[in-house]
Length: 127
Image 1 (cartoon, helix red, strand yellow):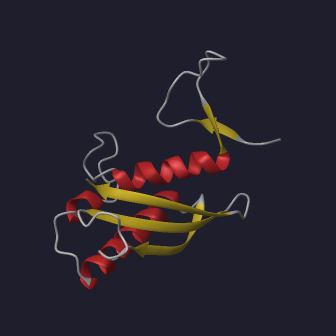
Image 2 (tube, rainbow, N blue to C red):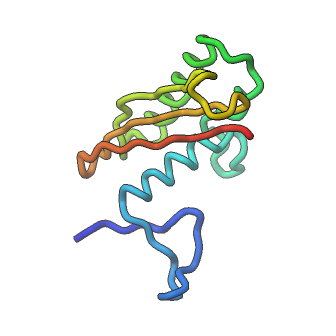
């Protein structure tokens, strides 16, 4: 039996008129996106939840920013999704690698602990 979870953002499926569902890998990817795009303090019921990447957007791009971003992402992933995934790599694109210099581009590779499947997600912060 394949695991199914509610899709994010929550919506009603037009065909079944029930809550839309997502497969396990998609659901975990959606949780990763929620975590990385949420700033701590943004959720009143869980004020520590989030990663805080948006606050780094206007910092000058340097190796120190990349290291800080990697540390924030890895720490947040381990804290909030450590029972779902094992982080393998966190790559922060250099200004030459990113399609837009006004963005932070984070490429995250992780293993789904339940299935052992390797997944990759790219998150763009900014314009």
